[in-house]
Image 1 (cartoon, one colour):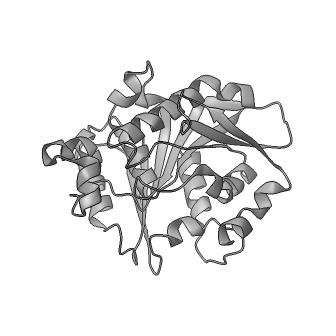
Image 2 (cartoon, rainbow, N blue to C red):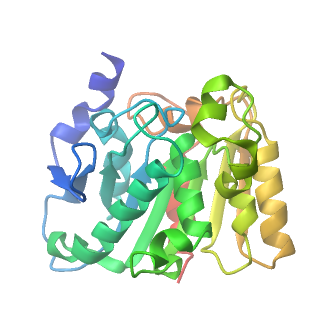
Length: 264
């Protein structure tokens, strides 16, 4: 019920939802596109958002509330589904994410989107997927594109650099010799898109070490990174902050929009 209430504004007003567009051949490889209702004749910047759920749960129908504040700010928002564990293991869900970004680059012009102003955003496991695609150039280069076509990445509560301890995570990412391939820090060379790494200080699921280790490596390689932590916010708070009826002194969408606007 909470998700339904959160998504009420996206069903009315100035947002058009284009549903269940295939970016691949499998049932899970579909995406929704949220566009402004009023056509201005101008190309809009684009955000591809990956939701979280421990690489195991979630679906795009839960997240219109994420799209709404950004569409209100002039963006087009793309929210893909992707395959999950136990159906698949790493790196299949990252490959799905890359396919969704490639589809967006190639097709968003038909929805008044500007593929030259494409941003990637994610929360939790979705932030891991988005950051890995942004940092590890193999995912897009293998499909004839480049991570240089991503203008910037914004991650909320992302597990970028961790060692799997739970049995399900060991099964998703293992064996241990493969762990470096799922660690975003492994692929930082200073040429990745600018990154905004955000984390809530009350997060007991994803530790601060993730943004600390990743941001330190980016700075070491003379890349571009901004970190921001939020007192009294937990793991879920970082994404629920975007829900219209939850009052907050913090505006996550404002922080991300301001960061994206600074990228040229």
